[in-house]
Length: 300
Image 1 (cartoon, one colour):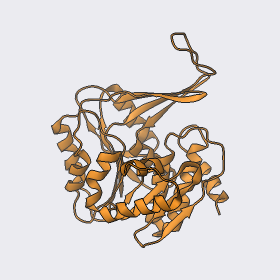
Image 2: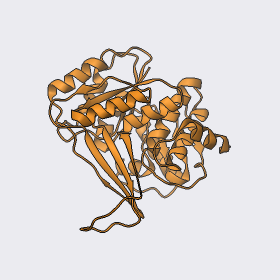
Image 3: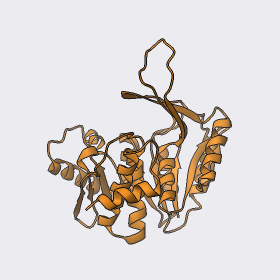
Image 4: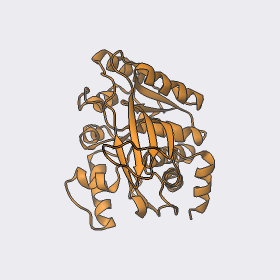
């Protein structure tokens, strides 16, 4: 079983306008409500790939109830811890020539809430895979992901797609997969990349620090996997018009994970991950199974 962890999920209110003026009344031309958070995005795409997962994390208030209900309607298993204070956040994504985001804060997560989550994590079994994605609420400590990893039973694999400090805290625990984009990878080492070889060199440094596989997304330049078998796998970006970049990286994580668990083939996993990432980028909202298949069939 795959488990995804989203510590600060959200309802994403995505709106389109023909123009936006500060201090004036602006009207939308379209609006959609999505269930957001990086781990939830992964679970959503896994469901489209007929791969079961369970979404873990925290919810609160009426927005949390709406989030959980929506995920269950889509067929996604959930096992959230309900926080007592605050509400699951609402994030506003405004598209008006440029992308503008206003993200909510989210509920207060107490130490008891966190201990309840750790109790669930401790029930995972050998062969399970847990994916830690995204930022943490401001009320939680920087060692949050590290404590989750330390609670994992022996034989449970984990993947991490997180910001600098959160990622570096867990890399020594031998994550099966980490997925920085090329900008995040450069930031980890306070440098800039001038060639593909620079990316490979620094990805291998992360392997020396503990990571087993490093999947680097490079926007329009495609993606690379620096794998624990010693090989570098490359994949050009899917061809299409980018409509919405939100969730594309999470879709790639889902596709790669599902592909690898199904076949154990790194090249196939990278191809499926690229198809999922591209399909989401080319549509408003996360990609459907049909949209993923269409993109997959265009890849060499």
